Amino acid sequence: MIHKNSPLPIYHQLAEAIKKEIQTRQLLPGEMIPSEREYTEKYEISRMTVRQAVTNLVNEGYLYRQRGIGTFVAHQKIEHPLQGLTGFSEDMQSRGHEPGTRVVSLAKVEADLELSAKLEVKAGTPILELKRIRLADALPMAYETVYLSKVLSPGRVTEEMALTSIYGFLEKTFGLKIKNGSQSIEASIAQKLEADMLGIAEGEPVLRIERISRLDNNKPFEVANSVYRADRYKLTVDMERQS
Image (cartoon, rainbow, N blue to C red; front, side):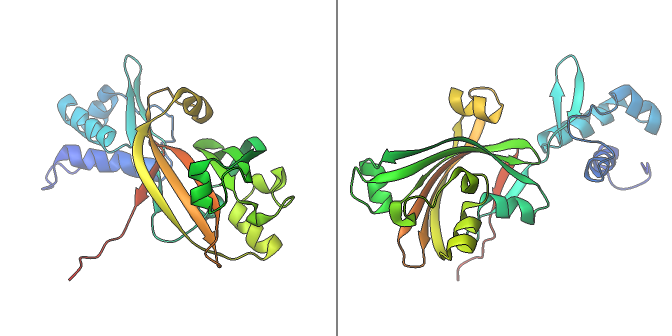
Protein backbone atom coordinates (compact mmCIF):
# COMPACT_ATOMS: atom_id res chain seq x y z
CA MET A 1 0.00 0.00 0.00
CA ILE A 2 1.29 3.44 -0.97
CA HIS A 3 0.40 6.39 1.29
CA LYS A 4 0.86 9.57 -0.70
CA ASN A 5 0.51 11.78 2.38
CA SER A 6 3.21 9.92 4.26
CA PRO A 7 6.49 11.74 5.05
CA LEU A 8 8.28 8.71 3.55
CA PRO A 9 9.13 9.19 -0.15
CA ILE A 10 6.85 7.23 -2.46
CA TYR A 11 9.78 5.47 -4.13
CA HIS A 12 10.88 4.23 -0.70
CA GLN A 13 7.38 2.93 0.08
CA LEU A 14 7.22 1.10 -3.25
CA ALA A 15 10.67 -0.41 -2.72
CA GLU A 16 9.61 -1.67 0.72
CA ALA A 17 6.41 -3.13 -0.74
CA ILE A 18 8.35 -5.03 -3.41
CA LYS A 19 10.91 -6.13 -0.82
CA LYS A 20 8.12 -7.51 1.38
CA GLU A 21 6.73 -9.50 -1.57
CA ILE A 22 10.20 -11.02 -2.06
CA GLN A 23 10.63 -11.82 1.64
CA THR A 24 7.19 -13.45 1.85
CA ARG A 25 7.88 -15.33 -1.42
CA GLN A 26 5.03 -13.71 -3.31
CA LEU A 27 7.82 -12.94 -5.76
CA LEU A 28 10.25 -15.85 -6.19
CA PRO A 29 13.93 -15.87 -7.19
CA GLY A 30 14.27 -15.77 -10.96
CA GLU A 31 10.73 -14.41 -11.43
CA MET A 32 10.21 -11.25 -13.45
CA ILE A 33 8.57 -8.41 -11.55
CA PRO A 34 5.75 -6.30 -13.04
CA SER A 35 6.75 -3.64 -15.56
CA GLU A 36 7.14 0.05 -14.75
CA ARG A 37 3.85 0.69 -16.52
CA GLU A 38 2.03 -1.87 -14.37
CA TYR A 39 3.35 -0.32 -11.15
CA THR A 40 2.53 3.15 -12.45
CA GLU A 41 -1.08 2.19 -13.18
CA LYS A 42 -1.54 0.11 -10.01
CA TYR A 43 -0.38 2.84 -7.59
CA GLU A 44 -1.08 5.91 -9.76
CA ILE A 45 2.48 7.14 -9.47
CA SER A 46 5.05 8.33 -12.02
CA ARG A 47 7.39 6.09 -13.95
CA MET A 48 10.32 8.07 -12.55
CA THR A 49 9.23 7.09 -9.03
CA VAL A 50 8.93 3.43 -10.01
CA ARG A 51 12.31 3.51 -11.71
CA GLN A 52 13.95 4.97 -8.58
CA ALA A 53 12.43 2.26 -6.37
CA VAL A 54 13.53 -0.53 -8.70
CA THR A 55 17.03 0.94 -9.11
CA ASN A 56 17.45 1.06 -5.33
CA LEU A 57 16.45 -2.62 -5.06
CA VAL A 58 18.87 -3.55 -7.84
CA ASN A 59 21.66 -1.74 -5.98
CA GLU A 60 20.71 -3.57 -2.77
CA GLY A 61 20.85 -6.94 -4.51
CA TYR A 62 17.14 -7.78 -4.31
CA LEU A 63 16.61 -7.45 -8.08
CA TYR A 64 18.67 -7.68 -11.26
CA ARG A 65 18.03 -6.38 -14.77
CA GLN A 66 18.36 -8.18 -18.09
CA ARG A 67 18.62 -5.67 -20.89
CA GLY A 68 15.75 -5.88 -23.33
CA ILE A 69 13.87 -8.42 -21.22
CA GLY A 70 12.95 -7.07 -17.80
CA THR A 71 13.80 -6.99 -14.11
CA PHE A 72 13.98 -10.18 -12.06
CA VAL A 73 14.11 -11.25 -8.42
CA ALA A 74 17.66 -12.12 -7.40
CA HIS A 75 18.64 -15.09 -5.25
CA GLN A 76 19.23 -13.64 -1.81
CA LYS A 77 22.71 -13.93 -0.36
CA ILE A 78 23.30 -16.36 2.47
CA GLU A 79 24.98 -14.69 5.43
CA HIS A 80 27.79 -16.39 7.30
CA PRO A 81 29.08 -14.89 10.56
CA LEU A 82 32.83 -15.03 11.00
CA GLN A 83 32.58 -15.89 14.69
CA GLY A 84 32.82 -19.58 15.56
CA LEU A 85 34.11 -22.61 13.68
CA THR A 86 31.41 -24.44 11.73
CA GLY A 87 31.39 -26.58 8.64
CA PHE A 88 29.46 -25.67 5.48
CA SER A 89 26.70 -28.23 6.08
CA GLU A 90 26.21 -27.15 9.69
CA ASP A 91 26.09 -23.51 8.66
CA MET A 92 23.51 -24.04 5.91
CA GLN A 93 21.28 -26.17 8.14
CA SER A 94 21.35 -23.55 10.90
CA ARG A 95 19.98 -21.01 8.39
CA GLY A 96 17.20 -23.21 7.10
CA HIS A 97 18.89 -24.22 3.84
CA GLU A 98 19.35 -27.75 2.55
CA PRO A 99 23.09 -28.47 2.14
CA GLY A 100 24.37 -30.73 -0.59
CA THR A 101 27.67 -31.91 -2.07
CA ARG A 102 28.98 -33.13 -5.41
CA VAL A 103 32.32 -34.88 -5.12
CA VAL A 104 34.59 -34.02 -8.05
CA SER A 105 37.60 -36.10 -6.99
CA LEU A 106 39.19 -37.80 -3.99
CA ALA A 107 42.83 -38.78 -4.34
CA LYS A 108 46.06 -39.30 -2.43
CA VAL A 109 48.75 -36.71 -3.21
CA GLU A 110 52.08 -35.67 -1.74
CA ALA A 111 52.29 -32.53 0.38
CA ASP A 112 54.33 -29.79 -1.28
CA LEU A 113 56.36 -27.32 0.74
CA GLU A 114 53.44 -24.93 1.29
CA LEU A 115 50.98 -27.63 2.37
CA SER A 116 53.53 -29.44 4.50
CA ALA A 117 54.14 -26.25 6.46
CA LYS A 118 50.43 -25.63 6.99
CA LEU A 119 49.68 -29.23 7.98
CA GLU A 120 52.92 -29.54 9.96
CA VAL A 121 54.12 -32.64 8.11
CA LYS A 122 57.22 -33.36 6.08
CA ALA A 123 57.25 -32.41 2.41
CA GLY A 124 56.30 -35.42 0.32
CA THR A 125 54.05 -36.87 3.04
CA PRO A 126 50.95 -38.58 1.56
CA ILE A 127 47.79 -36.54 2.21
CA LEU A 128 44.28 -36.64 0.80
CA GLU A 129 43.02 -34.12 -1.73
CA LEU A 130 39.24 -33.72 -1.93
CA LYS A 131 37.58 -31.52 -4.53
CA ARG A 132 33.85 -30.92 -4.24
CA ILE A 133 31.05 -28.51 -5.06
CA ARG A 134 28.98 -27.34 -2.09
CA LEU A 135 25.28 -26.70 -2.66
CA ALA A 136 22.59 -24.78 -0.82
CA ASP A 137 19.03 -25.72 -1.80
CA ALA A 138 20.51 -27.54 -4.83
CA LEU A 139 22.28 -24.39 -6.08
CA PRO A 140 26.10 -24.25 -6.39
CA MET A 141 27.49 -22.08 -3.61
CA ALA A 142 31.18 -22.95 -3.38
CA TYR A 143 33.90 -24.99 -5.07
CA GLU A 144 36.43 -26.23 -2.57
CA THR A 145 39.68 -28.13 -2.49
CA VAL A 146 40.35 -29.76 0.87
CA TYR A 147 43.65 -31.26 1.97
CA LEU A 148 43.44 -33.69 4.87
CA SER A 149 46.40 -34.77 6.93
CA LYS A 150 47.38 -38.39 7.58
CA VAL A 151 46.60 -37.62 11.23
CA LEU A 152 43.14 -38.94 10.30
CA SER A 153 44.76 -42.31 9.46
CA PRO A 154 44.38 -44.22 6.18
CA GLY A 155 40.93 -45.49 5.30
CA ARG A 156 39.01 -43.03 7.42
CA VAL A 157 38.24 -40.59 4.64
CA THR A 158 35.90 -42.06 2.05
CA GLU A 159 33.60 -40.66 -0.61
CA GLU A 160 30.72 -41.33 1.78
CA MET A 161 32.28 -38.94 4.26
CA ALA A 162 33.05 -36.43 1.52
CA LEU A 163 29.33 -36.19 0.73
CA THR A 164 28.54 -35.07 4.27
CA SER A 165 29.96 -32.71 6.86
CA ILE A 166 33.59 -33.68 7.42
CA TYR A 167 33.52 -32.06 10.85
CA GLY A 168 30.37 -33.88 11.91
CA PHE A 169 31.59 -37.20 10.50
CA LEU A 170 34.94 -37.05 12.30
CA GLU A 171 33.37 -36.03 15.59
CA LYS A 172 30.45 -38.46 15.59
CA THR A 173 32.07 -41.48 13.93
CA PHE A 174 35.63 -41.35 15.24
CA GLY A 175 35.28 -39.27 18.39
CA LEU A 176 37.81 -36.68 17.26
CA LYS A 177 37.50 -33.21 18.78
CA ILE A 178 37.92 -30.18 16.57
CA LYS A 179 39.26 -27.25 18.56
CA ASN A 180 39.78 -24.19 16.41
CA GLY A 181 40.79 -22.80 13.07
CA SER A 182 42.11 -19.74 11.27
CA GLN A 183 41.05 -18.39 7.92
CA SER A 184 41.91 -15.69 5.41
CA ILE A 185 39.46 -14.07 3.00
CA GLU A 186 40.02 -12.12 -0.18
CA ALA A 187 37.98 -10.79 -3.08
CA SER A 188 38.87 -12.24 -6.47
CA ILE A 189 37.47 -13.26 -9.85
CA ALA A 190 36.53 -16.75 -11.03
CA GLN A 191 38.98 -18.66 -13.19
CA LYS A 192 37.53 -20.85 -15.95
CA LEU A 193 37.46 -24.13 -14.01
CA GLU A 194 35.97 -22.44 -10.96
CA ALA A 195 33.37 -20.68 -13.09
CA ASP A 196 32.38 -23.95 -14.74
CA MET A 197 31.99 -25.64 -11.37
CA LEU A 198 29.91 -22.80 -9.94
CA GLY A 199 27.75 -22.18 -13.00
CA ILE A 200 28.91 -18.58 -13.47
CA ALA A 201 30.83 -16.70 -16.13
CA GLU A 202 34.61 -16.60 -16.08
CA GLY A 203 35.77 -13.37 -14.45
CA GLU A 204 32.74 -12.93 -12.19
CA PRO A 205 33.48 -11.85 -8.60
CA VAL A 206 34.08 -14.54 -5.99
CA LEU A 207 35.25 -14.80 -2.40
CA ARG A 208 38.33 -16.92 -1.76
CA ILE A 209 38.55 -18.37 1.72
CA GLU A 210 41.40 -20.46 3.08
CA ARG A 211 40.89 -22.24 6.40
CA ILE A 212 43.29 -24.26 8.51
CA SER A 213 41.51 -26.37 11.14
CA ARG A 214 43.03 -28.02 14.19
CA LEU A 215 42.16 -30.85 16.57
CA ASP A 216 42.13 -30.50 20.35
CA ASN A 217 45.84 -31.41 20.44
CA ASN A 218 46.50 -28.30 18.29
CA LYS A 219 47.50 -30.52 15.37
CA PRO A 220 46.28 -29.14 12.02
CA PHE A 221 44.28 -31.74 10.10
CA GLU A 222 42.72 -29.72 7.28
CA VAL A 223 43.58 -27.00 4.80
CA ALA A 224 40.47 -25.95 2.85
CA ASN A 225 40.61 -23.56 -0.11
CA SER A 226 37.09 -22.49 -1.03
CA VAL A 227 35.78 -20.28 -3.82
CA TYR A 228 32.34 -18.85 -3.01
CA ARG A 229 29.91 -17.17 -5.37
CA ALA A 230 29.90 -13.51 -4.37
CA ASP A 231 26.35 -13.09 -5.67
CA ARG A 232 24.98 -15.70 -3.24
CA TYR A 233 27.20 -15.50 -0.19
CA LYS A 234 28.34 -12.78 2.17
CA LEU A 235 30.30 -12.69 5.39
CA THR A 236 29.28 -10.76 8.49
CA VAL A 237 31.08 -9.94 11.73
CA ASP A 238 30.08 -8.31 15.00
CA MET A 239 32.60 -5.81 16.34
CA GLU A 240 33.06 -3.99 19.60
CA ARG A 241 35.01 -0.79 19.99
CA GLN A 242 38.15 -1.33 22.03
CA SER A 243 38.59 0.98 25.00
